[in-house]
Length: 103
Image (cartoon, rainbow, N blue to C red):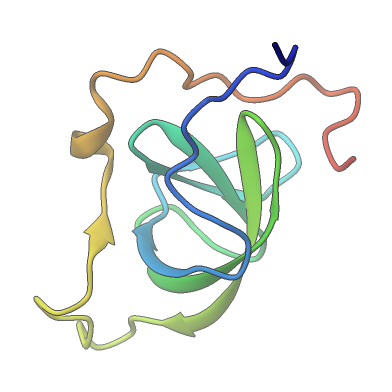
């Protein structure tokens, strides 16, 4: 039996997803959530919709980089946009502690 806890991450490294930035973390990174799973996105602001590439995944959160910004409402019904309304049932919505934040 493994000691690792599976938090059912809804994304994998290399995935491209469209997310809404709903908050800003203490280090200034935008925060998006997919089914409660936190994704930090540098250089974004609250209210932005962006297509990101997931770069690093941890057990409770991930980091992604912006690959496209939705400046003119271009992301349509074919783009799966993950918003906070889909995150109601997940209990892991806390921001990581300061120590080890970028590790």
